[in-house]
Length: 254
Image (cartoon, rainbow, N blue to C red; front, side, top):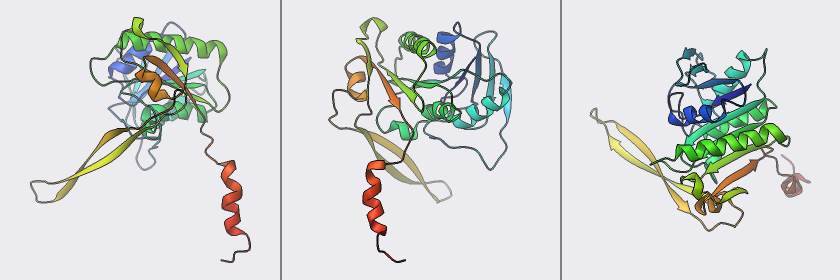
């Protein structure tokens, strides 16, 4: 069984195309947000009830549930409901827009996959690297191919795959590259406005800062027409920093 989630919502084109791409590989169960939850990162809902409603999916015979929570919530709840028949694989996406560079810290798409990793399951996040005139057929073919490889070979322990797909016709894809996170950063912009009651409110927007990046980066791979496959490890400690920080506390008194 494959559990599928996303952050664009259960009625998005991306999740429909992901299910369509892999539905012949195994039984599919969908647990996804009831509306868009982009950029919520790995938030969990702790202070209100989670509600789940079975919904009609666009592909017949697919069991799908809409949840009033985050992508991570959806995977947690999905794994709970499927505890008697645990999925073999978690897939997330297909996201509309890239998830490269520092996007991985904000992405709800990645968070759903990471929740699978926390549960000890292989997990893959898929993103189509554009917001307009989307080549869903390309994304479907890539998702099917990568999923088949993961089923065949498995994944190393403590690794999530982050797959970014160029938004071009499939025949123009130059190949697949294993990549590292590149330099793709944002600068936040806050605009203050006044509502009809004369109260201030703030609108957050971002613009991308393109930074020169190495040949093995996800940013360059996608720009050059390659599918970027980035293995991500969520072991966040820093052994090489340990001795430096430890020296702060030598012969120091509080």
